Image (tube, rainbow, N blue to C red; front, top):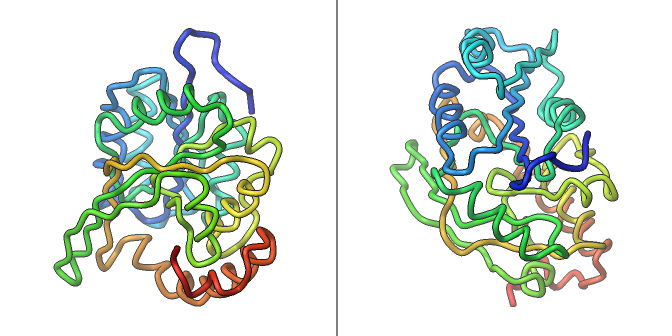
Length: 249
C-alpha cells in the first residue's frame, strides 16, 4: 500500500469483498461511485463467486478507470479478500464496503473531513440504517461518538461497525490488517484501540441490509458464536475488566 495521494484532497480506497452477490452488487457499486467526494478508487475482490458477480463488476472496471477487479480462483473467505484489496490500495484512508450494502452519497466526504481534523483517530464509523427484511425491521442505529465511551464498552461488542468504518492507512500499517477468521472487524478494532483513538459520526451514513441471501445473513450464526470469545479477548487486551462484557456505561 501507499501512504497517501498526490493531490490536495486525499485519496480514499474502497475495498469491496464479494461472494455470490449478483443480486445486490450493482447497487453497492453505484452508491460508492456516486459519492460527493471524488478522489475515490474502488478495489473489488471477487472471492470465487459461482454466479455473475465478477462479470457485473467487470463491466464497471471496463467503464471506470478508478475501478479495479481482483479475482480469487477459489472461495477463501472475506478476511483474505479484504486484505488482498488493502494490499494494492493507494489511499490515505480505507473503507471496507460490503457488496450487499450501500453508503449515503455524503458518507466519504463527511468521514474524510473528520479524519483530517482529528489526526489521532485511527478509525471513524457512523450511525447506520438497519434493514432486516426477514423480520420487517427498519431502524436507525447509533453508536457512541467519543473515544472514552467507545473504549469503555468495547469488550461488550464492536462499538464501531466494520461497514461504516473509515480507517487511516498509517494506523493499519502500525497495527496490521485483518487476522481473525471470525469477527475480523472486531478483532482489528481491539488492536487499533491499543494505540489509536476511535470515533463515530452520529448521523447514519450506511445502510446495513439483512435478507435471506445476504452475506450478513450467511455470517450471522458464526458472528454470534464468536462474539463472546472476542469480547473476552477485548477485555484482556484493553484491561477494562470482565464486568464490561455485561454492562454499558
